[in-house]
Amino acid sequence: MTFTTILCGTDGSADAQNAVEHTAQLAKQLGAEVVLVHAIGLLEHMPVDPANPEVTIGDWAAQQLAADWSERLRQLGVPYTCIAEEGPPLLALPRVAARVNADLIVVASHGGGTSSALPLGSTAHGIVQLAARPVLVIPGNQRT
Image (cartoon, rainbow, N blue to C red):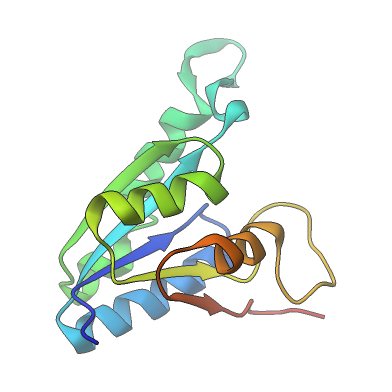
């Protein structure tokens, strides 16, 4: 099996950025393209600052996706595309993976939500259970 397109989900958390780092290194070694995806949920339509309602959390996240969250891909010269996709990650990531015909989905074991003592967070667990393609789960940096 060859991996030419790797989808990586991120929410900008430290663990998600660790997954981006692993994805960047893998893509560099394989000569693959990366599709970096952030799922835009319901709260993402709220303003970042109530005094400035025209800038939503989703707008901010899309800017971060195109700038800071994809920085390592640029540093390594890995070709990539950023997609801010509507919906919860559990639905958005597989939907984008199918649309771009990704060969592999990469997610962090845990995202920026509440921490858990469980080995996998709800998104990683759900993606592993539901995805129609291989999934690589990157463990968190500092799990206790």
